[in-house]
Image 1 (cartoon, rainbow, N blue to C red):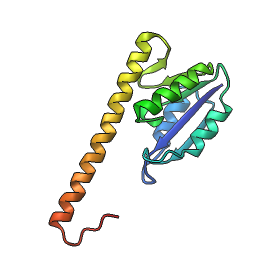
Image 2 (cartoon, rainbow, N blue to C red; image 1 turned 90 degrees about the horizontal axis):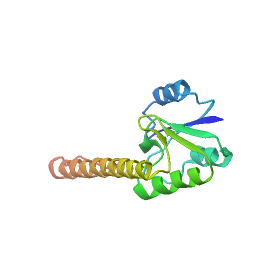
Image 3 (cartoon, rainbow, N blue to C red; image 1 turned 180 degrees about the vertical axis):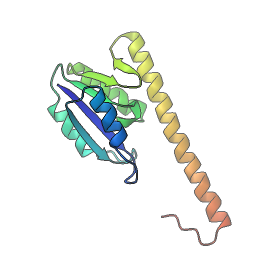
Length: 140
């Protein structure tokens, strides 16, 4: 069976685009949630991981929907592959266990983590600037 997983990081973001891409890729059942990457708890992903069986396919639109941490992403995808589950990342393709597949996965995970780290850094710099230049600024 083909399962999809969609996630956005804030309540303001919409899941519709991801869900449409997952359906177009053949996902028969889609799990979705709104959770920030800084939180480890993702109940819908956890539920999905419990129901996946060998020969099932997990489809996500982008690698960073599963994880932005190299370690977390590598562990999760390795676990899925060991269970015989196909991992299909729509903007990358199916992830296999060949040396080339592993290299590409690790490179994409590293870029995703770098992107997330840069967003956090820019956000912190912006807040610091506001604290210094706006006496009414409240970080909240």
